[in-house]
Length: 353
Image 1 (cartoon, rainbow, N blue to C red):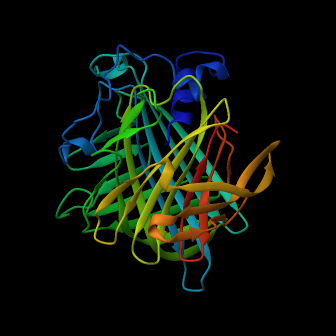
Image 2: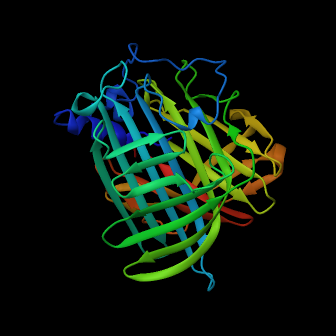
């Protein structure tokens, strides 16, 4: 669900003064995008091509999170995201005629500290971009790329980013299949037809180095890649979302999100992924999700402990933030950080509060 800051960057580089008004949906993502390519059911995904950019669509992102530990049991979270936003429809052009904006977000979280950084770039001049073969997504010196000699795309990756007070360099590997979210990769975000194309690699194993305030840690743990692209993923009445990706100790994986609406209702859905990688869509009736506790952050009350039940899977857990103050104080602020619960770990993103 990583789209909010991308649109803000597009607005800034296009010379606008402020983000769209709330009536236009969160970060303007409910605005009409009829001139762009539309998300429709029935797409046949093609890999490795779909790992690369999709120029006809308005917005797109490559998003990695990792739940990490060192040998002493210290817990960390890592986030890396690259966003692509087309300022106008049509094919990509060369050089400064390119109308694409790129935005990078990176963060590191521990139990006591949370640092985030942001990079902005204009397309067409090599400062940022993405390609399918060999896979590479980058902005400045932040990079997510296939390692030389990798057997297949996304099987053997290197992930690097850093800011003034943190850095990380991680090796990600997986031999497991990709997971198509929603209905064979068609992920609905409302009952009105808004949707994205969405797939994940939830089975990455990560290892490498991480530094905070000059101290270096050797870390390992599970990681998760999300890939989405769309042109109008929200409706005008939707105000933000709560998104979870969870690694269960059983070997199963769980993705779910709730898109909140102005009338207090929400669109709730998810995907249950068994240890073999088989995916099952979860609908609103299958999921019970409610906040249990909040944390006051920057004048907002953010839900940082939740009750999550999926009776059909005998799941009853209470994910809570490793660090409740994992506030991304960037061009458009939001909450993003690692969570833990009896039986696993994961990540939580909350926008629009």
